[in-house]
Image (cartoon, rainbow, N blue to C red; front, side):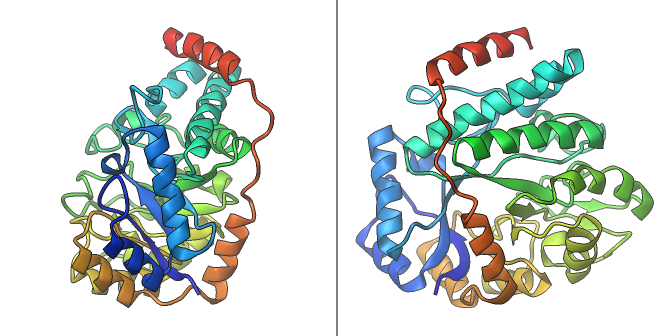
Length: 335
């Protein structure tokens, strides 16, 4: 039975040790980074070998947002704009902005499906504030909950239409964080009422999406100590309760410096808090083994959510790629 784990590979092809590790550890899914990407044929072979190593159609994820966060790029794949471009188009013409958001996501899905990737860590529903760390910045679709949720929904629909599952992030919100959680633990001291009406509000309309990723952020008004990823209160009261998210919940990368303790402790704390799956990236071979040993097989509600998410994978609808790229290029140029 697959373990409650999503993990990565070191290079452009799997080593013999990696194949053996994946066969034994049996992670639920994999994630792709720039270091794994060279050309379409190479990436297609890599994703095929990942699935072969576990003997099933395991989900393969990537962070392909556009802008600063794009793992597949020129010369083999187009460059996509950051989320703020869709927000700017939305401000001029709501219908055109949502069409651009859908179209950009649909084109990304086409690129990903072609090389065997079927999950994109997108859309963001983070609502940034002016004093926040720029780690979110122009990745966000706007600065109001309604606008962010509306554009994010169009992005999710575009991915799904292209046969790629969306991952809603970073639940319950990274927009107020005054630190980059890759490097330090962000602490948000905003009162609960404000959080519920702004940050959390952007996620509620998206609660039916199949997959979500937590934020390594402390919200002192609700849990003064633990970040959302490892907080039972945040996961159960806010993510599952207030927001109403019932999809598969994965941690953000547990190797990020926002979390403390050993990697095994971080993995166990994430799962104990209510995350269904642990995401571990950028570790040594020994660290990957440590995390895998700490992750149990997916079972119970976690397995139910995982199965429900994968059941939403479907073949792409008919789509004129060339015409769509031309339309999208014209829209992007206006912004």
